[in-house]
Length: 76
Length: 420
Image (cartoon, rainbow over all chains, first blue to last red; front, side):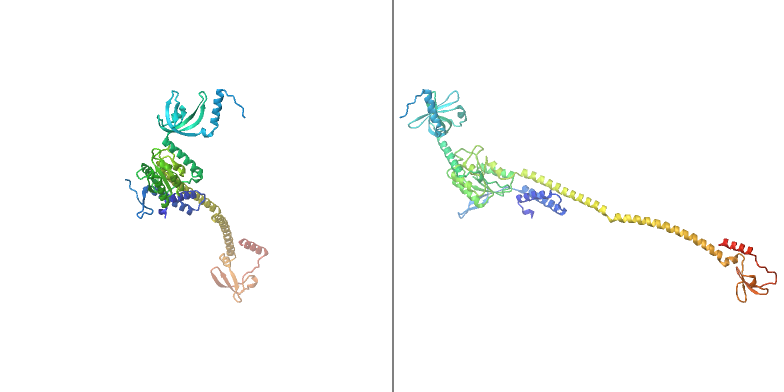
């Protein structure tokens, strides 16, 4: 399920998870769950940054003359 | 009828100067005309005349203002001068004190710019309350610019370097010329229709005329109407356009605009590292806390453990056992001693033991009565004699007989007491 999170979602959940783990006196199970979740989320964020490649598309007038289509942008 | 007033020349010139300077419309005015007699004195101050078909006006521009001018007018240039009107008292000459000269065409543009800026500002189009915050992590970025422009490359390079996650949607448009404003408006509408998190409206540097499309009222209104917040990065740092004022954020350059719409992955990675450290520290601390809790419980358990009581009892039981064993052994020994002495006594009382010492039991043969007195035995009586190892018959003789004295009896009794 982590694989579907956007960077923003994963990053924000990670920050919350860390803050929770820093609270006092958590049940052991909960602490271990939070640690595991946080590690997965951090991994997700790093993977997203590592694998990111800027995709540039452009709007072109639609064939039927109404609105626009989105096509990959090729620099001329 | 009003009274005549008497002035000295100085007084009159000063009075006229006061009148002119009191008129607010003369304090901040633009004058259009043709330059003649342009000359710069050794002092650096500039003197010239502005004229039109039917009139002329003396102008002076002090050195400080003249030095700031990028444009130096030539004789015959149509110009637009800005300044205030006052009187040079020593000569009795009124003149325009100029602080800025622009070629007339550009000067007009400038006036248009100022007029539009004032109008839109009055409408509240540039108000701070209208400015929207930019998304922290844009997923879809609309870029409104020319596909050929260096600005687009700059934007894409910055995005790719800083944060390459978002989709970039280019809405191509002309960015200069008469067609440009309408196209820019259409492009802004198109990206908004598609749906983007933020819009970058940009073009590279150029002359005032080349950037003019971004001072168009339609463009300014389209920027203000955009659903997604707009970052405007047009020209260079010193170029301000109406679109800049209408945008949510003004960026000094196209690259700067791109930097504003995405986070920097170097910072993000740094933050991620520190979050990972905090995760480790957090779990460490939680586990430590658990360790301490377990240790505390263990100690508490040890304090209340039944083993302690059991041990105490066990010791006490041990004590009892040792004591009772000693008592039993002692008693047994005592009993054994007593038994032994009783046995000895019994031995002493056993008639057989007496027989062993040489005594005999004598009984009468006829009636079986034991003979304990001389009176029971008469000569000729048959007697039954029992000794240690058997019995035999005998007969009482006719010889002497004697009865024992008291002394003998007591001696015998003493002897018996000793045996007991």
